Image (cartoon, rainbow, N blue to C red; front, side, top):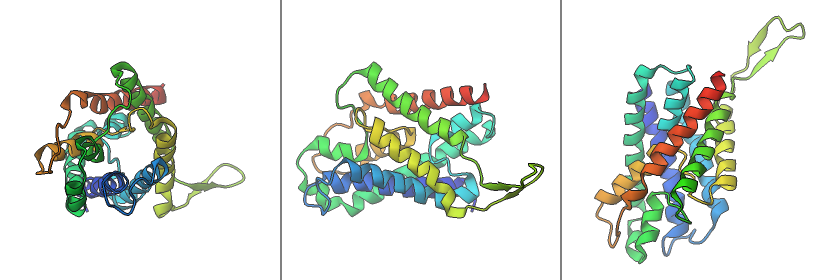
Length: 244
């Protein structure tokens, strides 16, 4: 599998699980309607887990333009590959959002509130304060990016500290990233819905705008700059501190 396809598929799986849980919890007449924030954050974390499991061996499983940019700033990922990764992530996220719409189409039709339908696809501020909303996304993405820099491969070091033996963690290596996303959602997700990923918000928002969703209302493009720019800023700050 090429890195491009790996990023596309991994991000698609992430969005299917993440946007899917938003649909399940928010839309009318679903089995999970009203299940709550714990269900939402847990599914997003596990969505990250399965995305990393699939894409990790082939692309490193960035699944997030802010992560690709942050790793490049941190000097551990080539700048020449950043654009291709971002394109793959955007396409994967758009495809994932489209598949969620297909699965939940009847429930979108059964839901009256336009804001609820938009909330399945996108993030938004519960209290609209652009500066605080921006800083919230910066802090959340900073935590994600800073932790990513310190997630290392497992190894066993001999007692004399002169040699070490790598330990292949396989799928277990995806757990630290999933736990990080989980705790960010539980701790910092309340104000804005913790996009912490430009593709997570922009690509599904594009799909909301172009899909024939009954009574969908506005896609609220006036907010989109926050979940795009703030995660990049947060990742950049984490990368600079890591290099220092």
